[in-house]
Length: 251
Image (cartoon, rainbow, N blue to C red; front, side):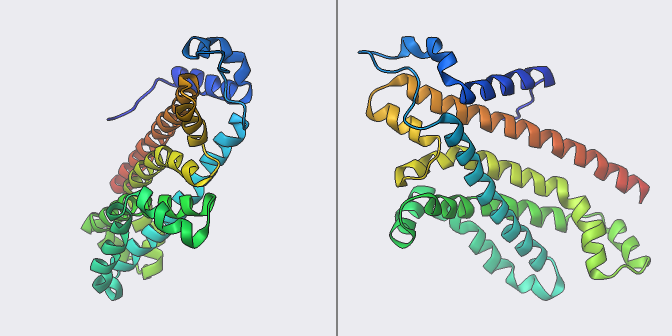
């Protein structure tokens, strides 16, 4: 579903989110009705700000790693010398979708131990496919006249890739990254089941103590992160698409 928030609403939501994770006790009154038997309305076992930053940090590291590998594979298989590796590359990118993150965590924990590492592996594998497929699409659907013009002016292979192909394919690649990031923001919550410090910790604590306020707090922060990131990357994608159109007209 396409997410498009007016700029003013986006800024208000972002301001409220920042205020909540920095000073959650200021919002205690809003969550008080969701508690029972004297339960605390705000999760205080760990700082919400630290959990939020760590959550985003894990997602960022996993997405960067997925992007480097997926785009690298897409570039490889779209070169004449690497075309034969397309089936192998696609199989590698599909690993994360074949094995769900929970299964990857179950396999990774005995090898890597508890904590952040298994979560990074799960998110890295899960994020490969959308980025790889979009990068492959972006690099294989370039207008022939543009690539022919690049050849005509004597550009080398690396010059065509960096100055023509990648800039034109970037909006499509970014769409894959956007999907990967949004899915990872939600999926990273399960990392808390293996002792990673993510916002899933708040949700799990709420479920185990039957504290609806905590469940809602963790869920809301994750949901708002996902919406704002999706909206921000969509805006960047539209900007790059407009610039791509300008480059094509110029060419």
